[in-house]
Every structure is written in C-alpha cells, then in structure tokens.
Length: 86
Image (cartoon, rainbow, N blue to C red; front, side, top):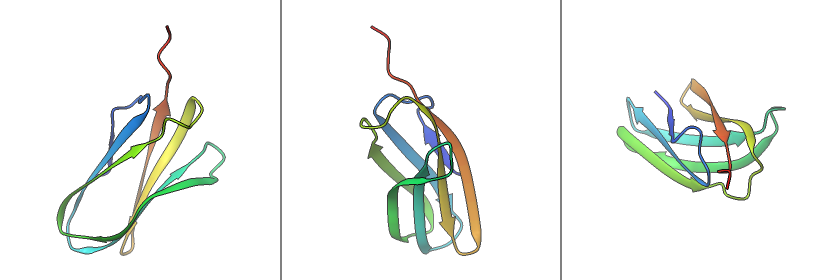
C-alpha cells in the first residue's frame, strides 16, 4: 500500500510502499487538475519496502495526488501541502 507521510506536509514528503516483487517503478506527483508536476522516482526497485523522500517546498499550498505504477498495478493517494501559520 502506498503511504505518503506526513500528511499534511510542509516541505518534505516521504513516500513508502511495500512491493510484492522486484519490478520497475514510477512515482509521480499530480496537481488537482490531474496535470503531472513531477516524477519523484523512476527505476528498478527490489521486493519489499521502497521509500522515496522528496523536497516539495517549492509547491503552493493545496491538494496533490501521488501515483505509483508497477507491472499492471496502480495506486493513488491524496496529499495536502500546508505552510505553517506564523
């Protein structure tokens, strides 16, 4: 299962997923319209835990989606960027 933490996040988000097998993986970030903003990871991944940390401090506050694709599977989770109030 794809797990982005923390959620909501301020600058850095960690994306964790447990892969049932070794495979090529792609993790992408989308805005609320479905437009791809960034590829967070593309490459081979071993069976087991894959963790990718990304600095997303340049993003505006709002709701985004993270999607992981491997073999014929796809999982998507929503994340919220929220700047702390001073």
